[in-house]
Length: 446
Image (cartoon, rainbow, N blue to C red; front, side, top):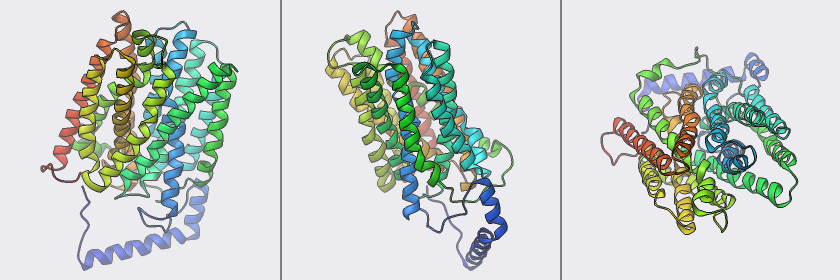
């Protein structure tokens, strides 16, 4: 919903005085020294929602999504490869991917608060360094526990230190066009979800250069693409003096609580297809034919470009972000229920296309709506980090629970599919409650 701004002469005078004071403070030598020491920049002169600097940060955030969520969304290739080479079952291998996504989210409460305090550059640089280091260490691994430490823990923490602070900074440059900005940025996850799996498949299986150099190639690509981000990513707002790592006032905000629960339930079941669609094709459809794991991962992530760009665009111009998130969640749950009836290659590809679009829409709208759960821009990093940390528990346990259900049922996927679909359905109901708490009339743009 649009924020209500104060009217009247007194309010205007206070706003003018505050702006003058703010500009004077930003231009003072002491403030420039504090900015230089913390690695941050004073607020830019570009207005919110416009200017080259604002749209440059969309491109930079696109790269961040490419190297964080792109790697996470492409884990299905690793899932299929590890189950064949490590001698571990689906549930054990799924822990690698789920712990990686867990850290991507859970580090947010720490990284977000440090970002709000004025240390974005430090946190972001540490995250990028840790990501690249993790991949080089992964290239040396040969056992399950080594891969777990490098890919799940080290890479996951690096992802979290990079993603959440960057998203908080992007939100400082946009207000009315925020969903579009986040959607264009989130398309990087789909691009990364295409590039990295294709790279792995081509180098590992086609050219047969081996696992170590395949992963090192990933590391070199990641480092090269991050170079402009390390130089150009700059916060627009000054550091916040808010004390504490947690914004306790959020727990009295009903919309914040219900939205956090909704996203927990949605993400509890959302990654079932991203992790297990390849193994489902191998076990239920057959190893031969067009429905190979790499083809399905390419389709699932490729159509995500559509799901990450067009729904946020529609949300900005017509419906509102929350109004679009609710039906997207409902439709995703229905589709996972329908997945249980798929028994052919054509049906599997049809599912991958439609679900890829809906899941991508949810992934793009989620951070855009999460940012609106913040009363002031200065608390964005902290509150978004809190939501991410809560949702991280769903990403930690969801894929592993599905893997355990599959193992318990002797390789049948029906139980895992019902679990995933039911979780997303409950999340959709909770999201509808958030929408109702924001505005009574369903025609309102929220």
